Image (cartoon, rainbow, N blue to C red; front, side):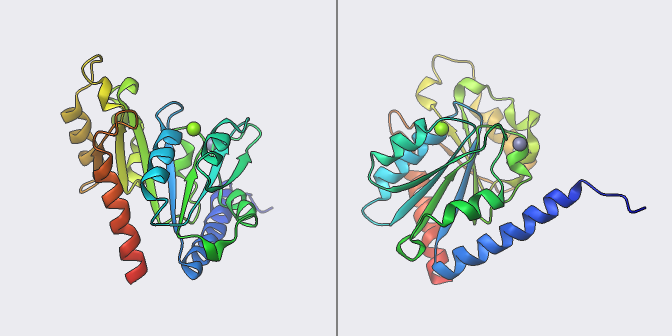
Length: 219
Ligand code: MG
Ligand code: ZN
């Protein structure tokens, strides 16, 4: 009797992720998978990013959440197109969910697609969505030990953001240790320290994102 292997789930996901990726490429869309713990500031980052780029790029957002449309409602106020995925308990987005959400967008009218994953530092690392860039948002209140405790998600990332640096003075967090641990996990990882509340450091992230977009357009 044939033994069914659980890794099929991931293989199926990878195939669908490739389809999504091909579609993004065909439509000239830069897709970003934004991952991080609950409360790290993923939605805040999206709001800041939209504010900074909405005059230059046509932006769409997919909001992943176990329940509620709280985040999607905040995004909608910015005027960009947003689709909510409620995962009904699932702790990560997968490529099939994205594929179904894409039906609701006019893809030829999009330059940038921001995908907010479910707050979780574990399984989003294993489920590619077809995105070009994976970003992990960390934040000062989470503590500086997260890269060491959850290395897989940081290893998968193209960019790591440390949010809420306006709280550095109030909390014990060693940014140098954080950065050092990240670079041990992934050499050359792009790291930005910022605050979505005070806007400090935000422009470095925005400039980097613009550069990624230019690189994509120039092929
Ligand atoms: Mg959120
Ligand atoms: Zn999960």
